[in-house]
Each structure stands twice: as C-alpha cells, then as structure tokens.
Image 1 (cartoon, protein in one colour):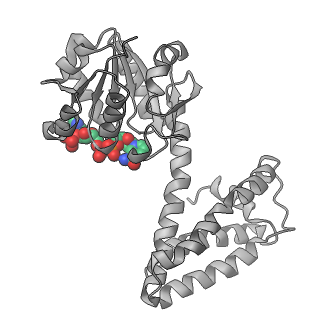
Image 2: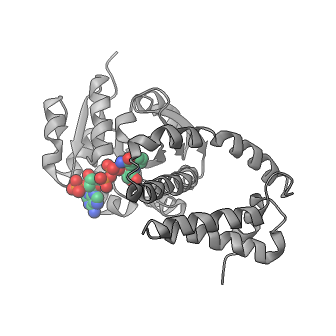
Image 3: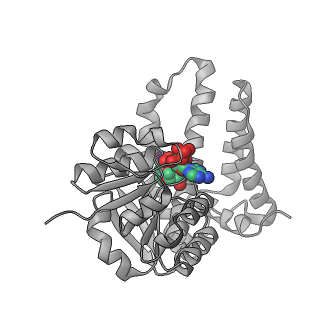
Length: 290
Ligand code: NDP
C-alpha cells in the first residue's frame, strides 16, 4: 500500500527532522519554507519543493506546520487562499493555549480542519522510541491520520479543546526550562573553580535521575493539600538557598536565579509557612506579588 503524501511547511531544525523522517518511511513529501535554501538536503532525499505556500497546501490533504509560533501561520496560509478548504492542518508550532485556540478557529473558519500538536522531543529524537507529541482537536481527524503522524512520534491525545495540547506542552516546557537554566547556572558557578561540565556530569545526572522520587512524594501531598513539615521545612530551604546565593556571588557569578528562588521561599516564610514543607510554596505561587 502506498504511503500517505504529506506537506511539511516550515523547515527549521524540527521541520527538517520531520520531513526527513517521513521520507525515510517512504511517504511522498512536499515542502515549503520561507527561506527556500533550507529545503536543499530534503530535495536530495526525494522531497518536492513547492514554489509557493498555495502550491504546498494544494499538494496534499495532510499539511504539517512547524513554525516558530502561531503568528507565522497566518501570512503563510493566507497565501494558500482557497486551497486551504478541505485540508487537515496539523500545527506542531508551539504557542500559548489561547493563541492555538485562535489559530484553530481561524483555520476552521476557512473550511479546513485543525489539530494542535506539542512536540516533546528535540529534532534528533524525532522518529526514535520514546518520542511523543501532545495532540488536541477533533479526535476523528487525528485518528484518520494517526498512522502517518506516528512516523514522527507517538500520539498522546489530550482532548477536543484545541488549546489542551498547547497547555500540556507549556506545563512540561515550564519544568524543562527552569531545570535546564538551573543546570547552566550550576556550571557557571563551577567554572571559576576550574570544574568542567564533563567532570560534574556524574554528579549532576544522578541528582536529576533522583527527581521522580520527589515528584511523586510532593505531588501526592500537594494533591491532598498536605504541606506538613515533617520531612523538610521552608525555613531550612531559606537557609540552604542563602548559602547558594553566597556561593554564587563568591564565584563572581550573577546570583539572579537562586536569589529569585530565595525570594519566593522568603515570601512563604513571611506568610507563616516557615515550619511547613517546600510544597507550601503552592500558596505563594497562587497568590502573585502585587
Ligand atoms: P525555528 O524557529 O528554528 O524554525 C521555524 C521555522 O519557522 C523556519 O522554517 C522559519 O522560516 C519559519 N518562520 C518563522 N517565522 C516565519 C514567518 N513569519 N513567516 C514564514 N516562516 C516563518 O524552530 P524549530 O524548527 O526549532 O521548531 C519549530 C517548532 O517546534 C517551534 O514552535 C518550537 O517551539 C517547536 N519545538 C522545537 C523543538 C526544538 O528542540 N527545536 C523541540 C520541541 C518543539 P525561515 O527558515 O525562513 O526562517
């Protein structure tokens, strides 16, 4: 049986990885990118470079977008004009839940169907085991194209609301960015001591590998509204973070990151949670500073 033909619009690192994975799986692929030169390698892999967005959209029912954000979609699809009607637009560009809902409504109003997607892996992990994408939108549309989309990653359907895939994406990327910036900060403090990232890896990696224990422990208690300080106390976190800020400053490194965390903890202590667990920061986060 011949494979479903697919259009991929947007050839940044992610779009290129996706178009290439589809080609390797023998799907006919049409591509378009604002900067046409980025299609060169894909054309050697057998992809067809469309001359215009209208040509790319008209080529296939299934159109995957991989753009910086949703704002980039409008000028491209506007150029597609009437070719848009009847298409399935799978927008794998990340953005806020609100903007993805607006984008889905815009596409739907032009006679096409829209799926929102939030890809959870970097480009080199596309089409590798364990790769997953959050999807939301009309489930029957997703089901109709599931086998093709599964060439890229596994499919995790979050619900009919088009904003849901973006919401789950934003929740996980929130954790990702704060964790990754924490790692870069750690390395910045280590560097003046001539301690390299390579040397620290055997210490940093187990610290993160141990995190699921804490996620489960605190997650269960937070769901239950249980912030008792039988294992850890916010006042202990305050003292510990103060040491981190001082160690950072002593290394000549900008202390903005741990100082911001210390500030949050101090607000929790000032609100009377000094004897409660770090989980009591939930109450600080949910009462933003005025
Ligand atoms: P890039 O920002 O590097 O590339 C995005 C593409 O969008 C490029 O092809 C670019 O065209 C195009 N583009 C941007 N603005 C416009 C515009 N106004 N008009 C026309 N085309 C435009 O992103 P990535 O490829 O890295 O990622 C794509 C999406 O996937 C993003 O939303 C990202 O958040 C998400 N994602 C990325 C991951 C990653 O690790 N890279 C991981 C998970 C999700 P041109 O080449 O002409 O500049």
